[in-house]
Image (cartoon, rainbow, N blue to C red; front, side):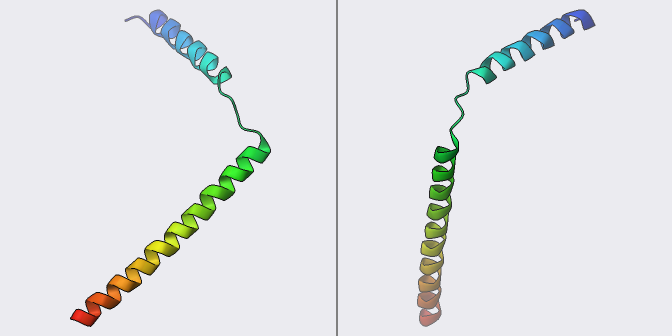
Length: 65
């Protein structure tokens, strides 16, 4: 493949990329903030649940041993 064909292929690829980029619907600031807070809260709650289960299981195994 010649360099000229590669350049044309790359140009088409960037044009396609730009066309797809314009189709993206970006969230507004309020939605982004709400979703970020939700993800953070869920992550913290799941971390607490996992830590609690870990301590309970560790206590049970130490009790048996």
